Image 1 (cartoon, rainbow, N blue to C red):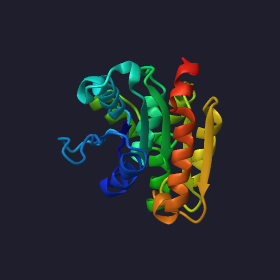
Image 2: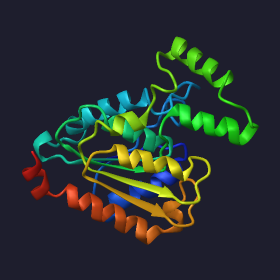
Image 3: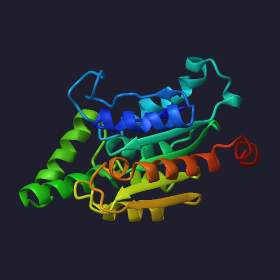
Length: 229
């Protein structure tokens, strides 16, 4: 099973095809808050979305009619979906969640908003970002610094593959390095040469598929599952 989340559903469908057609997995593609068939206009930057994904994971055995003992789940996301994936990874997950793949996720909502505020409008973080974070905390119960994939991956002990394009300016490439350093082993990093934001698959289709398959097969085999429990 692969769970995917992204602002661009077309991108995630390409990734879902790898798991379904190439690797013969069942697929679940939940929409994030304010996207697709999920109601509302409020985006939660992957932070509250992690709670929804944890519920999907809990429901998976019953949904697919497969016993938990024989189920092996991969959580894979792109962009905000990658941030969601990393936020999920820091929570307690069932044994049947075996590994994670994150593609071009950000270090925190604060860092991403700060980057965009400066890059698009040449504005400093103070006072606008501080005010917006405070209002989000008051309305939704979380702050921009609290929504931190960086802090979450530091708590993750399950395998994770990090993917990022070296020409990404939307979620700048530098963000993947502190994420990778914070994550305990086992882990692997692939920097896609020449790729902008969320373009690693489009630019390097064969290599992307190979990287994902090799990583997932390494940590999602029946042998690994038995020896790691």
